[in-house]
Length: 459
Image (tube, rainbow, N blue to C red):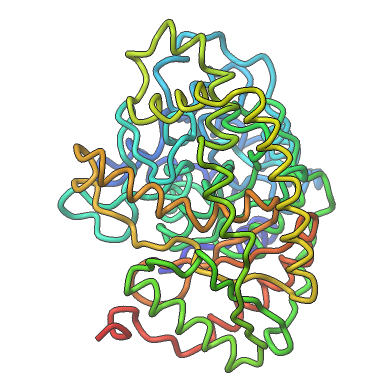
């Protein structure tokens, strides 16, 4: 049975079909279910605090003083956000003895002011530095797809948040996206994830991976859910996105990099989705996007994430290297290889890339491509094989990173069918509202399209 959207939950709360306390109790029970993913999807749960907050929102609603339509809806937050009174560990053991946060992160504070009920902190890749979502300290949250025999990765770095939303342990999750960390987990878990233009949502109180590329966004169940959360996070007025019908949309399929080396099932699902949009009246153009071909070269020495994370971690690494996930520590240490001149060149190259990519996208309503080139890998295949892990991580991050490097906004929608395959729509910097309108129309077209099971498509 499909999980409810934020709009549906808000309507149920408004007319008294449910209460905030009932919603919180149901989520908390799912988290606590020993047969579920709660122990892997959450590093901590504040049951008492959540129930008190839910009860308070119920009282406010009775008094006609609910702070928003969404007041009382349970939500989870990634472990790298400051929550007042809690330690911000960022998926690590390295920071577990640090002092608790003295104030909420700006994004968390805005959700609280809207009346959302915080359930707990979600598991993530240590320090957000992977697209797979595995964490040797807190466990590997498993994607809903094929959980038997150890299961498959849920995507990183916002792994626990996506699993929580997919499994009904929370009705939305707050994540970050530096190279796909909202969109990859959404794609692997069959839900929706949004990466805003990086400057759109304040990042105060979020433990950084890359101060250049970090974006704060939602993971939820529909375009409208993500749009509502994005409005709250960005400090704008929540309103349903104006949907643009698929008919007449000009969509660009970039043939440079984004379609290379796709899993067969991903390729077939993507082709079916594009065909469905064409049948719905969208004008599809397949063409090179040369800027995407430059990204790997620009990032050859580790890019912004290595340089900027190394600046944060170099003293911690000197003191506590043994406490790090070795796979994460190795990526951070690459930042030591970059000189000041390398970094200055990196900034200049990226600035030029952003300008040229935006110019190339002018005249189109959105880019469209597979969110991730591969299906979720099996956890057992990656647990002890560093080479396999490295290959899978690069493929998971590749397409989403193209958008972070060009400073765009992007959303991942699930393609209907069998295995989880995401369809990514992306726009130029600052076109977030326009992208939501396009995404709402594409979402509606895909929901009504006769897309067969992905397994049927590959025969």
